[in-house]
Length: 305
Image 1 (cartoon, rainbow, N blue to C red):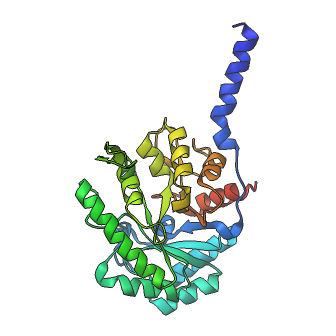
Image 2 (image 1 turned 45 degrees about the vertical axis):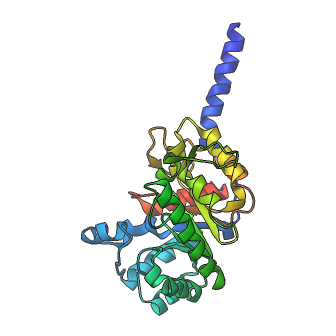
Image 3 (image 1 turned 90 degrees about the vertical axis):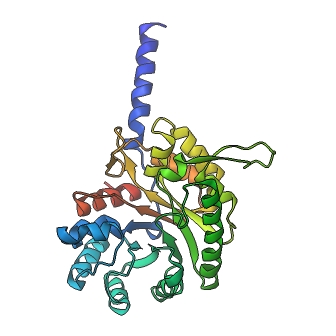
């Protein structure tokens, strides 16, 4: 290989490495949302933060909530994914705050709590949500294949009850649902192979009633940061089950970073996930500067400078 060929190859590798940061894919404003979790640092006093992060019942002063929602609307966001074991304010006041800010709560992360499920669905209907979600897969969990199958069965029941109220239920993954594997005959060949919990749950839930929100950061961590092509193949394979994405960028060291500043090739992700995605929800765990990051994220998703 001569020197010109070497330089050309090196330039190609450099452009490929930098393409994830440079590229963007403009999304419709009505499909872009943010996760309320991002803004906890701007709303919750430090002594209340542990309970808030755990999804516990934390009341946010309405003036603070109004201010946060107004700022997010000014940035350009029109949709929000709610969070928490309980609503952050009484239902009527919370609904008024959303309406005043021009922010629609289109979905939420609420617990899969059998005793309170009807009440959670009722609140979602009252807020005009199209979706109701959970931050995990629910009980009894994924600690064994038996538990994983029981969890899938429970999700079918939760999903049917949500559908009866006109809502679509989805569950959200972290890395454990990708990393954790059990021997399972996914292909119906009579020969079990090691299969991820995510795929086992998908295989044992009714696609009419149970849907998925894929967190791209945690999915990349689950597969391994050097397995980006595997993430794209996963999204293509299961796109009919995936209704929402958590759009969260990943730095080279595996940390969460500002959208468009990390190593994720977002145009490739959006293409692989498919056009049926209902909402692209920006999320940044423990964001040190939530409003600055929100503006970076929104401009990136809209391809605005």
